[in-house]
Image (cartoon, rainbow, N blue to C red; front, side, top):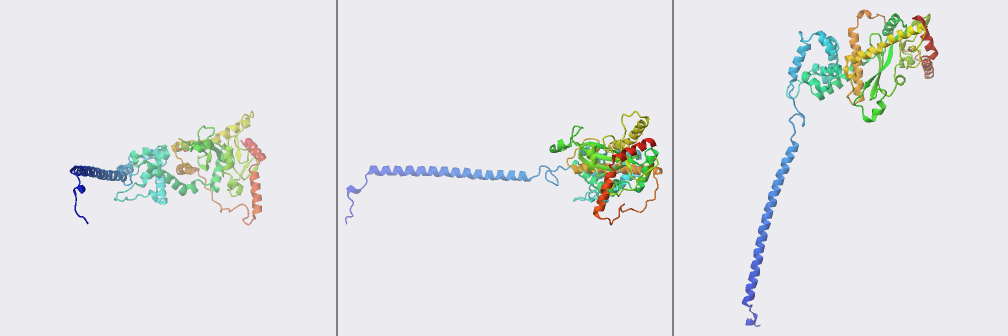
Amino acid sequence: MNYGAGPSHLPSSSSSSSDDETFSHYVEQWEEDMKQWEEEDEILARLYVANNKIMAYFSKEEEKPKRIGSVPGHLVINRGREEGNSRFYNDYFSNNPTYGANLFRRRFRMQRSLFLRIVDAVREHDNYFVQKVDGVGRLGLSTLQKVTAAFRMLAYGAPPDSTDEYVRIGESTVIECLKRFCRAIVEVYGDEYLRSPNTDDVARLLQKGEERGFPGMLGSLDCMHWEWKNCPTAWAGQYSGRHGGPTIILEAVASYDLWIWHAFFGLPGSNNDINVLQASNLFDNLTQGITPPAHYTIQGKNYDVGYYLADGIYPKWPTLVQTISKSEDKKKQYFAMMQEACRKDVERAFGVLQSRFAIIKGPARFWDKRTLHDIMTTCIIMHNMIIEDERDEQEDIIVSTPPSISNVEDIGTNDAERFRQFLTRHKKFKDKEAYFALRNALIEHL
């Protein structure tokens, strides 16, 4: 082998210098690229850190409540409810109150004794009205504050926010107090103060009717509309009648002392009085044969079913005596005048009910129909309670109550016989001939 290197195998000096320059250029280019990459990596790292800080900041902002309170988002106002309750107690309920009995009766629509009776009954029925201690040891709202807030809304028709300045209760709490108060009144007093007349009541009503020239009269019947401002749009057409806007109808029977014996509430305002009568339960007990007997005599003829005075739209039934319009007969004119005068009892009852409880005089602002039903029923119950509390005791007739009568029919009667008797009674109290005979007897009696 020839290991020798001849001149023909050695590179020339010019090609060697060219290769060195190329290599140096590559090295310099590589160093510049590495430096640029390091700078870009540093920038990206700083951006990543800054982005993490921004995300952490905004996540903390979202978790932080907008207002400080026990519930995120709730505004806490130190209303001074303890001081407010003390001032309110000294104004009306202390031994030497700032405002006397007359002003209490004017502002609360009833005597102080009756109001306190209602307060005690509501507190015993619903634990919500019991004054409690909160988590930090402070006394909560008192029973008087909660009940008074509800009373102010019922009596004055005031918005819930208006009670805050004096009673020291927030708007949402006042609304809850009103709803629970009305439900408690209906559950506690509904059976007693929305009852049908018992034997003693019928005897007293018959005697008063006899004194006024209408033997057998148990009261007068009519309807009232309550405007529903916040009626759902989908129901607006159904509840709109001759009054223009949506209304809800109350059918009621009132006696001479303005006691409301029958209340049927809830039908849409597009119905007339006849539709309401057909849907109500006014004559349910009569058709079932469980009404107390109403015995009276007109022109020598004995009757055992009482009647109500009504206006001309109602059907001609012997249980509804109407007026006579545009008659030239003197007796009939006198009968019409007397009938219309006595029939105003129910109109007076509506007027007194609305003046005592302005919430049902103005537009109803609640959405739920059940809430409106509770409000109307509560106002009627307390209206009757006020009448009972302020009634002249000498007007009451003491009648010994006979033993309760289970039913006029034999309990052992079979279903077919009971149904036949039901149809007989139903046909009897809708007999038009009996209606005209009764009305003519009343005309002659007057």
